[in-house]
Image (cartoon, rainbow, N blue to C red; front, side, top):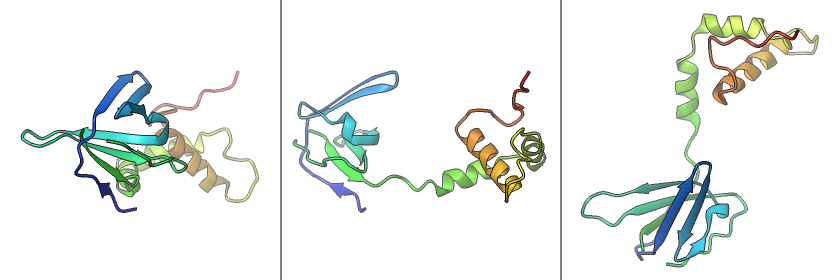
Length: 135
């Protein structure tokens, strides 16, 4: 999706409290329709609010800020940076130490590796932390 820019200024109000956010445009709370958002302001220019809509969002807006509606960012560069930062030896040790590695199913090593990387990417266990041993 190509970003759509409106040159018409709209009144914007953002109240972020912990994990919840109230995001109003012209008095209408649209937070439930928005995935990430980014507010940028350069001196001498109107602030720009970039919104990425959820897949089932209703993109109806009224409107004092330039509003840019775009597509989700490409996750490829972030994934590549994450993988490049991993220590191969530590990754191998973590995968081979998993309790679910030897389940006898096809592709068990690849599945264990992907599960380990997913857990690290989600912050469940970081490199260097070992899986807890059941007691």
